[in-house]
Image (cartoon, rainbow, N blue to C red; front, side):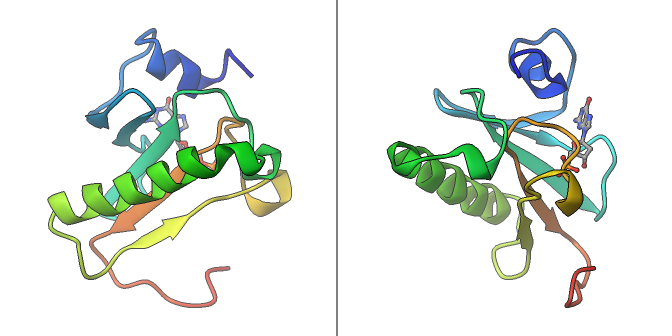
Length: 113
Ligand code: DGP
């Protein structure tokens, strides 16, 4: 867990285009964007999946969502954006460090597929 690609981004072992950072989280552009704007918001603490969180993570999870909202607003997408968490391999998760996808800048459809 501690040597995922995202842990290396947190420790600056590999570069990323960072848009926000505080004590609890880091946000940076996705290297393989699925929309004109595609940001990943991650906790600095190494949690592999949403499924691994507990009631003790309530404040952290709230913080991540509120920062996601703030980042969307700061980028000018306050009215239309999509927030996604892939949990587990079968749901499309490829990096096992919890992350929120913030996607914006194009229309989104439902169901997401
Ligand atoms: P997921 O499939 O939900 O686990 O999303 C992982 C995302 O991480 C995927 O959209 C691509 C992105 N990603 C993978 N490796 C890197 C990297 O080295 N740098 C950045 N910025 N994003 C990465």
